[in-house]
Length: 378
Ligand code: GMT
View 1: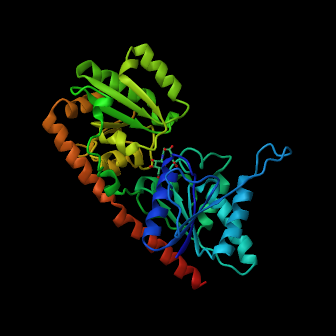
View 2: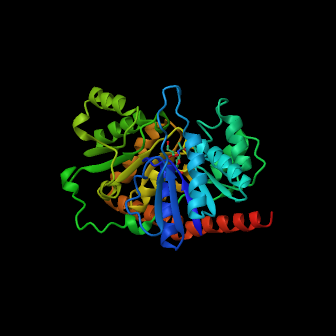
View 3: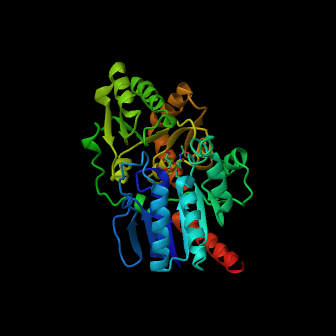
């Protein structure tokens, strides 16, 4: 198949999923065309089967807001015609599903039929999409998509609760390339980050308020009072500075490393003992799955789709949002005993295998095939 993929090219989960999906589809013989404003961060190799088409938005002083949707839909029209793209898969409804619908309509005028698959990722529904300023357009573009998928059962329920949806929604969960996370590092270089007796706790996110970064610091503060430990904070975002301030005021700044965004997540997870994800809401929690795939147990909140990924007492523990004491107690119960830690590490990896890329990507292929044959009958 010739598949167009529209996504955010940044470090966010939806862009990562879209990129990994495109790479895997290309390995399975499909021709994949990424259409976005920058080469996706995880897309290292372009080749015969993987192409990138940049959407440019020329600055014009009249515009207070530059019209990205317009540029994207025009680019989609051009690329679909030039490369005979058969189906377009958009990740994150805003504004991608809306722009794709416009492209579809324009192509239709020229006798080209373009099916659109929309994958809902989370904040496009729960935090941003359902805002009254966007709701009508988001609802419209979900209902006008030829197929809609969501990354968890929880997100599907939220979508049906928040919008008036007339389309079916298939749940196709996020996935992980287990082989990539079975690191071939002879040495994780743990000694560069911590002493041998120190446990390493890691958090990776975009440092937005929804991630409850302060909870990460508070839980770590409780952990390091009981056992020697270090905290690795990976990512960039508005909550980073307040988090650095909190570390200073708690007197733990020498035990916390702020990395910024990193392309070496697998290296960081390689030397991690525990991962923390105390989010206010999370449709899936891809970062937790990446940790588990590297054999790192997860201490998380029980919000949204996280319980579908992190299993209480098996791959880690779940607590109510904001329950710092419970998260600290759970973390210590894993970290204090080497045998318990070892068991949780193995169980985390086994649980991650349920989301193996080789089982999930065929589900997307089935969605494409079903959509194409449905559209051909129209
Ligand atoms: O977590 C974010 O804020 C980024 C966001 C995104 O779209 O990049 O993540 C959402 O999509 C990820 C991939 O499907 C999910 O794993 C995250 O749980 C989801 N984030 C939220 O729901 C807050």
